Length: 218
Image: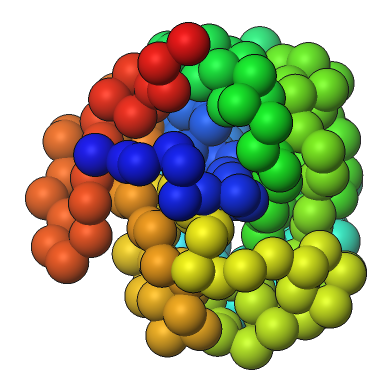
């Protein structure tokens, strides 16, 4: 699928791409409502009925990804709540082998995530993936999510790259569309971001279920 001789920079998403999205899905759809229900002494269905529309209203914005925002909104320490279920944080199969193989090729390896810095730190501590990268970039630095094409210009200012020789792997179609509009040439979508979820059909992009499918040959 990929001609690695045409790639200099590799940008990788974190949640749903390198890491199993099951953690985040469980956290936001079950654990947060449960703790919110306990705090307000309501049942979990009532908590979900209140919380889910509030989450949907800011989906795709920086507030959606901001743990400090949700801590203020919900009156709970959301970063601390994540630690309560951090045993669910898991690396997708073949990810570590892929990262090792790409480093062997001498490519520039950059993690680019919309996740809040507190979440990034927790997950890197749990998985020990940080050492595989030349740089970890959190879009909260710019207050612009990857869904907006102007993010890539801001990213370029601190991490120069040639869009024609850059690979982005992400599980978010809006992010991939944003990167395409900016001019990033090589785009790959993850079709099973949540190991417990269904295989997704993604139109308009090269797709992989596992990093084994684009593993460089050593």
